[in-house]
Amino acid sequence: MIRFRLDVADLAATSFAYSPLQETVLSLRMWTGHAWRFPALRETFAALRPAFEHLDHVLLTSLVARRRYWVPDFLTPRPPTSAPDVRREFAELRATDPAVVRVGLEQTFLPLGETVPARLTGAWDDPERLLLDIADALEEYWTSCLRPVWWPRARAVLEADIGHRARVLAEGGANALFTGISGRLSWAENMLSIERDGPWPSLATEIPIDGRRLLLTPSCFADGVSTMLSSQAPPHIVYGARGLATLAERPAPPAARTLQRLLGAPRARLLTMLTEPASTTELAHRLGVTPAAVSQHLSVLRAAHLLERTRHGRHVRYRLSPLGTALCEPHLGHGSDH
Image (cartoon, rainbow, N blue to C red; front, side, top):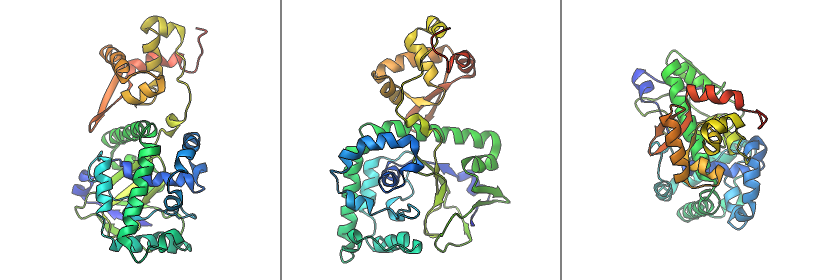
């Protein structure tokens, strides 16, 4: 069991972030035999396969351990801000000390009884070049496969998760937060424990936070919780985000006729889509309209106290208010026969 010791100040400083670079790296699990773990994402990534196969996919897939789908720590550093700019993340990745590359790769594969893939060991004599090749391949993958359509929707899911966790922490305290993230997390006597699952490499049983600030990061490509493979790394826990089902391609639910007569068809449809929080961009993508058009309708619904909004960094997400929930609930899951 891995334990993080947090005093009162450490707990107060615990924060959340998401990372485009982290999601880029962890999404490689979809190409290495682990897609079955994420059924809501399979259809989307199947559509991305032709673009992926035009990239250096041999290098990209060699970065993931097959047995436990681990990835090297140096590819998923702790995000520097709550919502980092991906260009800055790639720049910082390229600035990584080349000396950690071989160590990080060996730490990823060898404890699992796997050999480091030949595509990587072939460049042992020039770790700086290998690091740049990896960064270039990841950035090209991000640019051509993830950024155009998938990332706006994924970012909306991650922001919604962070908003939800923050509410849980405020309303229920640390124990409710940590146990709600995963059954493998427990909180007692200023100690956050992660139950080990499988052949972890040697880690200190107890890791003091000591003012280094614990960071919690949701991911679309985690089906549990994980932490850095090195106990010397800044404290960072990655966990599976909630709400992945919203990423599955499906039509928006139809609004009942009575709700349409009350609000108008566009606003009724928007309201019934907000059973899970969403951003203006995500709603526009799902409806096939412009963000400006969606924004106008959201403003009217919010003015009528049917919606609430929360802000995370530069991004705003909308969700049903208690009044909006009461109005929509009789109509959700029904067709237009009312």
